[in-house]
Amino acid sequence: MSKATQKYLASLILFGSNGIVASMIDLPSLFIVLARVSLGAALLVALVALSRSARTNLQAPKHPRQALYLAVSGAALGVAWLFLFEAYRYVGVGVASLLFYCGPVIVMALSPMLFKTRLTTQKVLGFAAVTVGAFLVVGQGLGEGVSPWGLFLGAMSAVMYAVMVIFSKKVTQIGGVECSAIQLCGSLAAVAVYLGFSAATGSIELPSATMLAHLNVPAALCIGLVNTGLGCYMYFSSMGELPVTRVAVCGYLEPLSAVVLSALLLGEAMTPANVLGAALILGGAIYSELGEKLHLRAAGNRMATA
Image 1 (cartoon, rainbow, N blue to C red):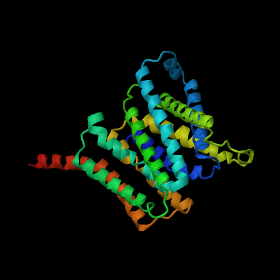
Image 2 (image 1 turned 135 degrees about the vertical axis):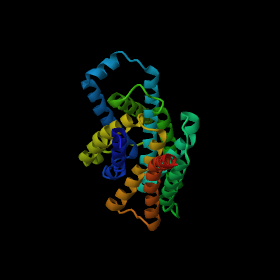
Image 3 (image 1 turned 90 degrees about the horizontal axis):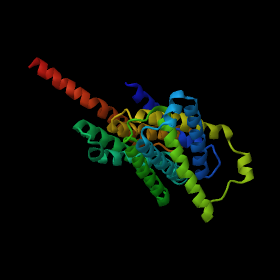
Image 4 (image 1 turned 90 degrees about the vertical axis):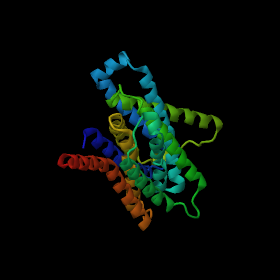
């Protein structure tokens, strides 16, 4: 397993705890997102400032178009988080996370056209199993009493996730901490614009003094510095080195970890269908990655013995 794959998987598991940490922060979802992108961006910008090579790159940027793609990708991610964290309030962590990760379905469907990716039989079958598994888990939350508005918010977070991946994959010349810093600054800009618009229209209420006095500071620092700063560094710095199909398929490990953690720590129900869905997600991801390699190896062995 490559180092990029290891970082990508580690970031997904870390992201899977976002809903758990967010549940400990008694703030409106908009301000949770604002706190996480502000702290995360501050951490990564500080790391860029400490990097001699990064300072050189910033003084003489060589790839302004790709930097713009990164900023757009980050802005899309910020908007996706706004939708996702609000969806947590209406449909729960597990369902909202899995709706968010319907985004890879969009990415996979568009990948032959946008990235000239060849969809092999093994990858399509593996991805189909992953998708069915995801909807098995989501379906358990679609019964009576589930908020249609919450489902809409989750679906919109998936659309913005797809936009984020598509623009991220256009970037090949900027990597590492610089890449992650630009994207998180884009996220911060999008969230700040939304906050300003909401404040101007009077559609939001600022947190009260009592709410701020009882703020869970360790949880806020964790979701900003660890889950967002460190997590986004591992996530974005690895994404550009991975095939888009691997990004899409393995991305489902995040909602899977979110469902498992929400069941263990928040007491959200996990039915037999949820367990079957989880098995399909894991099995499909493994088959998508290993099935084609095993098929090619078997074909090579047959040719060698013919």
